[in-house]
Amino acid sequence: MALDIFPVQTSIHPVPEAGRSQAPHEAAQQRAARPVTPAELESTIRDLGRVSAAFNRRLTFTVNEKLDQVVVKVVDADTDKVVREIPAAELQHVYERIREVVGLLFDERA
Image (cartoon, rainbow, N blue to C red):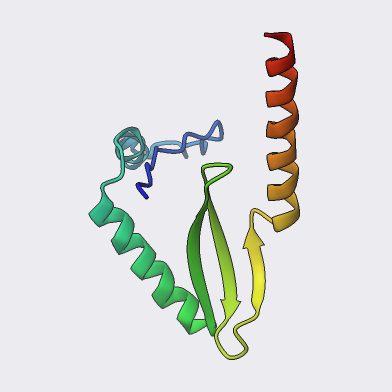
């Protein structure tokens, strides 16, 4: 399954300090404006894996095909128990149900 990664844009921008150059902020905006390559994505995932290993955790990345959304699970390395799921499983079920209801609503009106 292909996973398309799109840049995330936020509406929160740090306020620059007086006399400080805007160059780092502009460079970050330029990086956010281009799509992420598969090699960059793999590198980032490896880096996250190394950081999580330092905390005795393991990260798993899956795609919820019904939502077409990436799901991250934080797993305890010793017990293999899921410590946290992002987004939470309950929210995923709510999103799925909302999509079903919206689909039924529009199907009935068409």
